[in-house]
Amino acid sequence: MEASGAKNMDDLLAIDGDKWMELDATEWIADECCGAVVDDDIIPKDMDKAIKDAADSGIQMIVGTNNDEWNYFQEDSEGETPEEKFDSWVAGMDDVYKDAYEGCDADGKAALEELIKYEESIVPEEYAGDKEVKSALAKSGFITETWRYEILHFADRYADAGGDIYAYLWKVPSTRDNMYKSAVHAVELAYVFNNLKDDIYAGEVDEATAAKAQEAWTNFATNGNPSIEGADWKAYKTKDRMTMVIEKDKWECVSDPSKKARELLTRAYGDEPYPIW
Image (tube, rainbow, N blue to C red; front, side, top):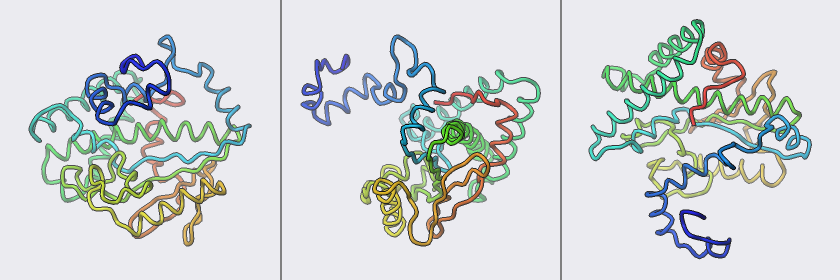
């Protein structure tokens, strides 16, 4: 409201989309909205109580991440050319890794080093031959897994508080070359919201997968269970961390699909995840 000059909700609703895009470009409104703050304090202050109150009230949730979240942010990095964007993306990831690494004890540092090596080992063969790209994708994998660790840490807390929560891991990739043909941040939005022509993240959308996604999310909104025919979506519990792994040709509920990275990050951070976002 401060950025736009709006005084009330009617004023906000009167602002057109082009104006919002202009404001976001100059004021970073979208990023500010990622964290609710009052007087420089994130609210609510007592997160444990907020989680327990929400669980007790019967609020149901779906949470999830995409397999290669951080690969998107090369596109969003500073620079005019693809080369400049790539260099900026890598520099930013180096800063994050350095900060995350320096905040750990000796065993935590060893765990992060092991995680980077693990991420290097799973870089797709298509990109593994380019050392610079391979290194960048390993760093991106580290940040993605750290982000996922934060989200699953919340899912653990909500489930332990008695909340009804479902988790997904989206693996249907973008078809865009500059997204490394991977399941980047926001790639699932075109599928879930039926924006099949919106190629900003997804490239060419697979319509059959989109139909399944819309059915699952509609089922959840309708009856609280996102299961669809052929895919029994089990609730997330810390005892097994059942997660729906969504691929183009297969939907399968899997126990703890991020186990390797999660265990390494648990060594590094325990119950205090490194705040990526």
